[in-house]
Image (cartoon, rainbow, N blue to C red; front, side, top):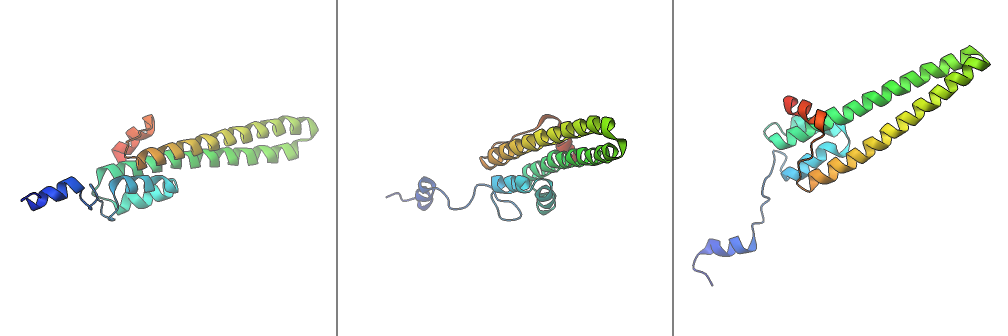
Length: 146
């Protein structure tokens, strides 16, 4: 037995988390929560964690990445609705062209959705693991925001 009472605590490890945030969560958990519901939880965590630079970065990156995905999908949906309206009003020949164009827009929207899902999983898992994933353009914007 050691005469130093703190020596046993060092060997067994501390029960306190290594780094906690204002919310009382470990830093990696708070950063991962920034991605759970995309830009929505990004906004929430951005304002709940004003002092933790890492969490604020991941919150800002979530806002930029998933906010961008949301805007892109909305724009494609809006364009598809306009195209569908033109197709319905244009007659048979025009309708076929616009119908095909609308299908292509739907396929593009689906591919964007799948890419967003993959990126969401990647960011969520890597951040929870304590890594610091950075999406090239979004990370630069997020750094300026955070």
